[in-house]
Length: 96
Image (cartoon, rainbow, N blue to C red; front, side, top):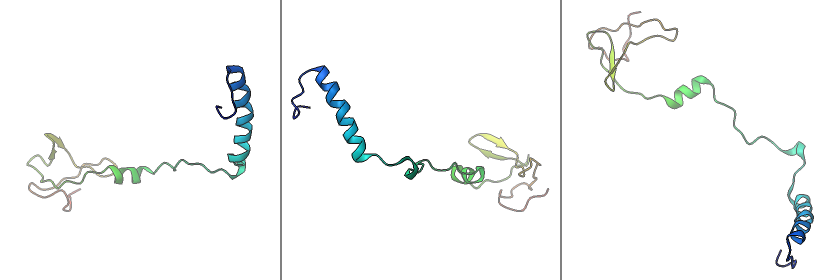
């Protein structure tokens, strides 16, 4: 605006209206050529793979595993309890 010798607010508003039109002509794209910049939301399975924490654990006498002072009972994908023998690691074959 200094180069255009704009000194008043009214002059600035007038200049900006004409400048925006010139700017739009120079830099805008037709609406049909734009694509979304957002990624598709990952599936639940992919999210679980991203957020998984893998840690080796031993089965205790109560057929549970312990993680950060909390006890967990292993279950299948449809919430059926899975029973391991005491001392098995959680990656061995369960007794269902």
